[in-house]
Image (cartoon, rainbow, N blue to C red):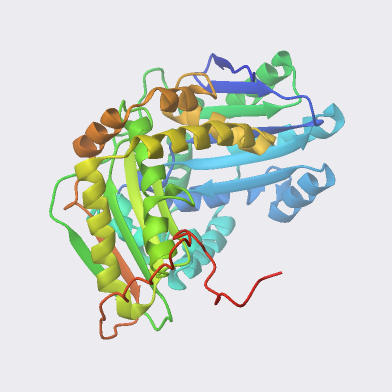
Length: 444
């Protein structure tokens, strides 16, 4: 059992902590609702503010910050998306190492210099990322299909904003954004590692007190709500590739929704495991794809159901039609009892693997913190074990639809062909074999 401790600081910061004493180190994750969806009329403001955090503090520039962390054996990771800004520090538990590392980390969060010189450099770097369509900037294929779900909203723009928006970002705007969205009241702290409860509480106070303060009751501006209605939309991006990237997505429900666990299991059955329906049909039976990635993730304050695969260009339309058909059948019939039992065992087994390291535990605890889930790492596993095929079938039809997909294809336009005929399985042979070699060849 990994016991979750939870509290709030006097400045309103929510904190979760799990003690693990196997290794003499700890992970500290601090998250803010300061993603690019908060840019308002300055696309790039959130990214510029976020990028400036470690560009300089009193007495240290970026190089000195990195050298200090390296010298202390500490690691700093930062990530930004539409919803949140995340900063993660890993440090040794030894106070001689952790004390200066925490002091510097607190400065980065609460008292970055945000000076004009650094702002000019950051804006140039961000604009270059946008120019070359870096996935890090939010220009991935998955982001492109997401834009079809939120046209005209901040979610339709890359994380790093736009070139024009970045050019107009000022230091005054950055300072105001930092004061509003990096405040203690809107921060979430998650701690995992070799710390006592008293040490974890002291760290949370140190971080919380270093952050800007806002008046009690100050709420973040509401984000745009995304509806799940509307006809299917398809977009093609022409690129000279040997394989075409095919993506489908539609809005679902967030992790705190009563139907989330049922949709999580449904996704695993459909395409989220090596033995899923999509893998069995598209790879094992037909040899059309190497892999199928089906996911049920959080995005834009909601859930996002997505399917991603790569297929030969001449089979794109037929593969898309087959994928739609498989999903429609799943909506109509729901899962089988055998599929559900297999997934229950799979989820139970994976829960042990998901606690093999502090980082894996941290990932789960961050999700609990973010979505206000019950304080139990086994909560989802327990919910899965209680599910019935009927509950999953009903949740699927309440929350998803066969005609709400947003479809993106990226690849070359070629003449389309029907799917190849299914291979004939010799009597007594398994239809699930992944080997494509002739019978006379044996792999060592």
